[in-house]
Length: 114
Image (tube, rainbow, N blue to C red; front, side, top):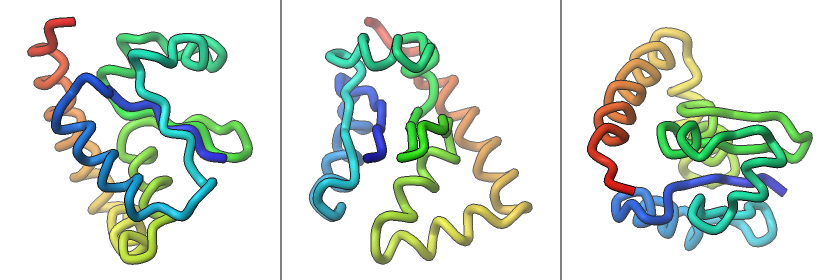
């Protein structure tokens, strides 16, 4: 199984994950909301702060994927989204998307009131 650590107290984050949950094949993902998965986070040495800043995922081989790499991991498992995973993985696109995501994620994190 692929474990996805997401901010379950963030409305936008939860909406996106809930969409993925609806379209994802059964028994592929373990959707782990950060607010109730502190033990799982600790198992992988992921701090709550790190997990709130960027999306984190653990693949079926126990490899950690962070940020855009975590999204690519999710998208590869979803029928139509596989195309986006391939496009985003292209070097120039990956660089642009990663930079944009980090800017967005840092801005969102600074606004958190947890």
